[in-house]
Image (cartoon, rainbow, N blue to C red; front, side):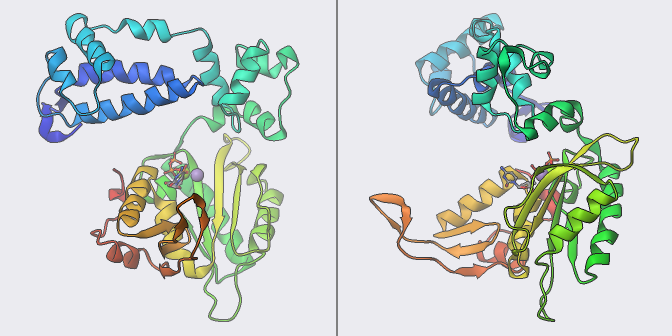
Amino acid sequence: CDQRNTDNGHCLNQGIIDKLQELMELHKEKLSDHDRWRVFSYSKTIRALRNHPVQIKSYEQARAIKGVGDKTARKIEEIIQTGELRRIDWEKTPDVESIKNFKGIYDVGPHTAYQWYNAGCRTLDDVKARKGGITLTPTQKIGVEYYDDINSRMPRSEAEQIFNKIKPIALEIDPMLFIEIMGSFRRGKADCGDIDILITRPTHDGKTHAGVIRSLLTELHVRQIITEDLATPDNFDGLEATYRGLCRLDFRSRRRRIDILAVPYESRGAALLYYTGDDIFNRAIRYKAGSMGYSLNQRGLFTAVARDPNDRRKKLTKGYVIASETEEEIFKILNVPWQEPHERVR
Ligand code: DCP
Ligand code: MG
Ligand code: MN
């Protein structure tokens, strides 16, 4: 909520926002394009309501907000008059809860979730029992087995302790490595959904970190810090690699999600920026880059590539890197004031 539009820290239109949000969450669990469109539309309305300077008291006031159509305005009117929104009960179909639970399984998207529902599965136990003859990929099996672990966050201190076990092992393999924790940890959050590790290496001596990921993962498996692989890199020996897995501090601890990203040394700044997040901040800064005619990704800040107007996927020119080695230079070129990692939340 925009602090200027508050009444003792409460959004002026919080009651309306809460109901529309509840309805939006229900549409999120559904599959049709129509539902997806509604999620998009409600999220825009909610954002507009958060920034709205006055308390909305009528249909007309609601209708006057940009992007709010007749149907949404009528819902807002109903909330104002009754404090309720009947549409919520109507959308609470029996599939919603099951689909939501299934989508909490690692590597299960909406399509698989609905497939399983249509096969007769309603609960995680049904999935475990392969009710309806459903099949699971190896990754989904791990997802089911460690459902609770994967869906809970760890205290910051645990992420730090795990990292403090991993770092010396990596430095034993190559003392010149740069290895740091990114993501919510670098942003200073008190709890972390996973551990995000960035690896790179200065190349002054002609060497790189190529191949290090393979040795590191082997070693982490041997020491039983990494316990399951969820996604291993296609190419272990290149300079770029992404790994996803589960790890644990010791045999008494819960499994925790771990991601490792290895990048060439010259793109470390762009990788730091990307991997620190948060995702909303990333979207905003990428948008800024785009509006200035650049394009930003985890490899660098590029001059925009010219695309074929008849087929936007076709690149006509390559575009070249104008900044990638430090976060500072990227902020500077984009004319964005420097923000410490903990401030990068939008
Ligand atoms: N990232 C992104 N867009 C995504 C996913 C990730 O820009 N769709 C970037 C920003 C994230 C970083 O990668 O901060 C790490 O991704 P995580 O999913 O691990 O997210 P966080 O570490 O920020 O939060 P959590 O504590 O939930 O792991
Ligand atoms: Mg993370
Ligand atoms: Mn992650």
